[in-house]
Image 1 (cartoon, rainbow, N blue to C red):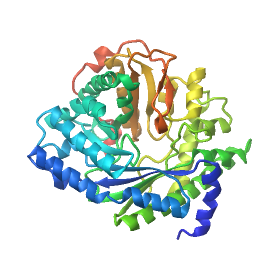
Image 2: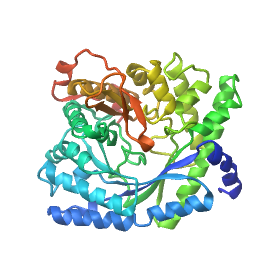
Image 3: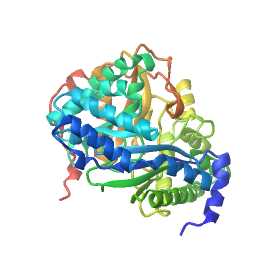
Image 4: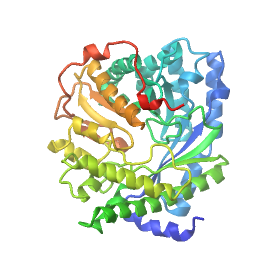
Length: 454
C-alpha cells in the first residue's frame, strides 16, 4: 500500500524541513524473567533484553541508509521494573542493581535510552512499588541511559496523593544528587496520569502488561514540515489551515508506517503502533512554538495560544489516523520547553509562564515537560504542580505528565543545559504561595463522576 513515490515525496521534507523518525522502540516483556533470587533475576533480564534487541541498532541504520530517512533514536522499553523485581527486591538498593543491568544492556546494544524503570501506583502502592520509587535518585545518578516513569493517577481510579507527595520528595532528591550535571537526573524522570502502555517516547516509555512478548513501536516527528506547509497558506481561513495540517500529518504518518513495517519484518517482531507526535528539538526550524507563531501569534504564550495548540493537536490526529490503522502512544504535539527553540525564546522574553503552559497542557499530548524551576522550590510545591497536572488528565480523560527540573543552586533567569535532544532552558518562576497542608493530606482524590461507565 505504501510505494516508493510516497517515499520520494518525503525527501524534501527530510533534507530541508527536519523530518525524521524520532525513535524505533522495541518493547520487551520481562514477566518471564521474574525470580525470587536477585542475581538470577538480573541474569535473566540481561539475557532477555540483549537477545530480543540485538539487531535493533543495525537494522535501524540499514533502513536509514536504504530509504534516506533519519532515525534519530533506537530505544528499548520494558515491563515496569517494580513488577519485575517484586519477588526478589527487598530494598531500594536491590532495585538499583536492576537499573545497572538495564544500563549495561543499553550500552552494549548501542541504544540511546532504555525505559521502564517504572511503577504504576495510580490507586495504591505496594511495598515493592515504594522500594522502586525510593531508589530512583540513586538509579538516575548511577546510570546513563535508564529512564524512569511513575503513573500516579488515572480517570478510572483517581489520583494517589500519597504517591504524588512522595514524588515531590523524589524529584527534589534526584535534582540534588545530580546537581553537578545541572540536575540531569530529573530530565530522565516523568510523573504521569493515564500513562499509555505503548508510548515509544522517553522518559515515559514502558512495556505495558497488556502488550505481547515484544513489539515494535515507532515515533515520528515533523514540526518543521508542518511549519513549512503553513507558510504556503499564510492568512488563509481556519478551514484551509486545518486541512493543510491534516494533509501534512497524513504524509508524515505514512512514512512512519513504512519504517515501522520494514523494521518489524527485518527484526521478526510484531508491529505495534505509530506515535505521530510533533516532537521538537533545539535545532533551528524544528519547533512546535514556531508553528504556533506561523498561525499568527507573536510568541508562544500570547493570547490565543491554547486555541492554536488545540487546533494543531486535533488536526495532527485527524490526518494521522487516516494514514495508519494503528495510531497509539501519545500522538499529537509536544511542548517541552528545553527541547524547543521557540519555547525557549518565549520563556526568555516572558511571554510563556508556568501557568500558561499548564493551560496549554489541557489540549496538547503530554504536559509540563522539561521545565527548569529554581532549585529552592519546595518538594510540596512540586507535588502541588504534579497534582494539578494529574487532575487535568483525570478530568479530561487524557494523558498528562510532569517532567520538572528543580535545578540545584539555580535561580530565576539562570540557564540549565543538558545537551543533545534535551537542550537547555531558562529557569522559570513558580508561584510562591504554599500548598503544604493540601498535599500532606493522605489518601487519594477520587475518580470523577464520568469515570463510572460500567
